[in-house]
Picture 1 (cartoon, rainbow, N blue to C red):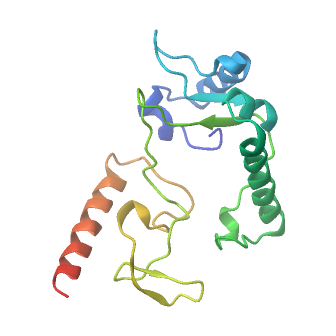
Picture 2: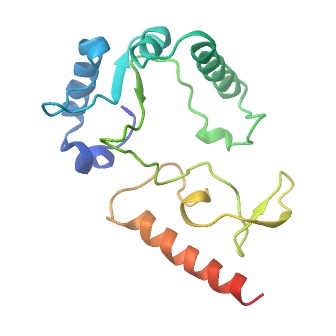
Picture 3: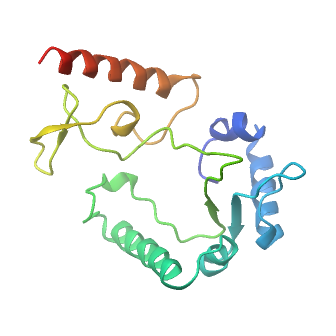
Length: 183
């Protein structure tokens, strides 16, 4: 989160200056298990900590679930170090290790749902929105459109234009629907 440009968070949390982000995020670390500040009666759904153990504890993960999350993070960091993602084939220049604290964790709650709007390293598709296999051949009958397809942005999601990703998703979804209806 700290590596994202300020405009990425300015609308959802009202912060526009990078220095203010640092202060906001450090506040999350300082609050520990209390998590991010919320409006009175609000549900906490974001935490920060200086270790994964601490963060996962704050988030209520324990036992096998906690160990699985830590194992997944360690595996991802290994892929970053070797410059190759053996599981999903992510572009090496987009492999950014998760090793420098603070670490942030969020999850969706009914009172404050969060939706992932963009898959930066999502499914690779061709011009017809067919999902491609590891050899870049179309997988018969499998399509990904809009926000389920990746590779639309060079390095990171840009929020310079409001509605950019949603407009893209709706347009591609419509076009794929039309093409499939004609088959």
